[in-house]
Image (cartoon, rainbow, N blue to C red; front, top):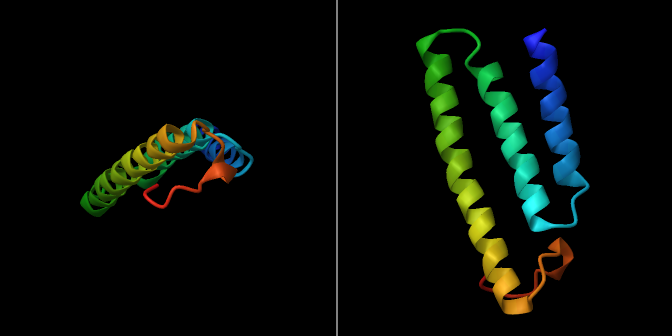
Length: 91
């Protein structure tokens, strides 16, 4: 039952991210994916599963910060949060 909920959340997060036109909405979809995949990875209480979940979390947290920083930089230069308006080379 919980597996179905996490899988549904994973599909919802992926759909939100793919269909998004706004950077913050794409970021929110990626965060939903993270919150849905972590329990699925660490479901077995094997130490390697916990290690894999921790590594996934750390990499995704760094990537999330990078996406937020890049989108804020782009919005600062262009005044737009639209994904298609990524024209600033710094972003």
